[in-house]
Length: 341
Length: 296
Image 1: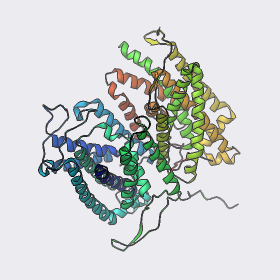
Image 2 (image 1 turned 135 degrees about the horizontal axis):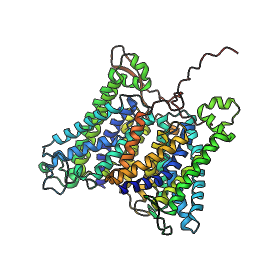
Image 3 (image 1 turned 45 degrees about the horizontal axis):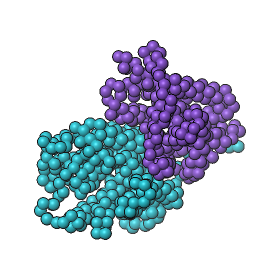
Image 4 (image 1 turned 90 degrees about the vertical axis):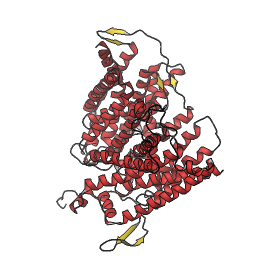
């Protein structure tokens, strides 16, 4: 029972970071990062290899490798997420592509990455993945397994609070408002003087760094990381979490992270097996997909929609009035003037 | 060298299923502007139904037809109950794609649950390969290629010569004008869903016969190649889709023979990414559309 609670809480923290990262990229800036999982993956891998030491003489083969002390692997993982986001963002986000194509391109990147890693064991040990990743503070604290899990819960809570506070502050600045402007009307934002491609890449990098951070934390918690952990469908789960909880609202993203991946993803794994092996996993996916469709039908903006507020001249927000925003249909297109009939 | 030529031969056979799928996808995409990721799951369905019919004793060719019909029905069901509902509410292009992704998950994991995650092997009578110059084909493979050619010819003539075909093309180009000209666009869209669904199931069945195995996720591997081919040709062009399918089919087979067999799907996906990156924003002739066009 204790394990159920502690593991669920750790995953809540991980998925909260994931949801915040995606919410920043998609909910605030409108970037459809459908390959999101690849950023979490690279954070996990880099954190792993920078903690494991070089691979010669080990049963695992991977590139790089250093035995860096805590918290450096964590930072390296975060950095890796950011760097990958920089590279991909510069290639993909700096040109105008229709949104569903953009989504598929990023999705394809995550699929190709998984296949290349599996087919090339010299990079990150192929489908076996990395194992024996050292857990931070484990040697110093001498806790039992369950005790260490509770410690990790506390550790995650601290980190999540810091990230949450940072994101809330960031999104209330004029930079945050610029994100929303770009999301709503890119052309108008550009005319207002916002450097749209640069903004997009910066948001992408920040989101990617947070994703890498979450990956590093998860790898350090689990002690292992393999391609099974970053199937491209995981991105869909995080998207559903953001959609259900509330796009453009970090508290909503947290709620979504709880409702979707934790309640429907992590908790069912503690249920006793029924049917044939693997049935509950299949049903989980069906439930998550149905949850997404139903929520999008009934409450398209999510449970906690984006807050509307009026910014005082020159900066921070004043009153935050909760007016749920539903996505309105596209404004009527301007038809050519017709001669009055 | 002959290995590469043989790979070209395999590529042509592989292109049969890709081409049929791409023709169906082009029909859907050209008309509705929705990137239907659920297409893959329905290809799995078509393949599984074809397998089931064969396992129950019917001829595999009859199984193909029944697979196509069931895929057709499923496509129409999904389109009318799910896609139309969200399109009418003004869902954006990405949201529609997400919705089709959700539909794909429900169908695939639903099938997986019903089949207990089994993978089925198709047992056809063993035949000797015939030699045509440097290529070796079995009779079944030749029939598949012939089927793809026949489908292409029929579809092309249908779109060019019949009234329904012309109405389809008109609706794809400009739905409002088509409606104003008296075309009953909701019937046209229904017909398009039915036809493209049939082609989808047929493609899944042909793919199953080609690789001789099928499970709930078979359609996924085919889907990326289908989307690449459909988008590589010009919008709504069936001929372009078939030509692209041929190119893609041969390219992936040659790549896997060239020693990169673990990467052949990565190559196909890479193609897809490049095509999407290079594709201009406008896809409906010169109209810039940012909404799904499922006209109801």
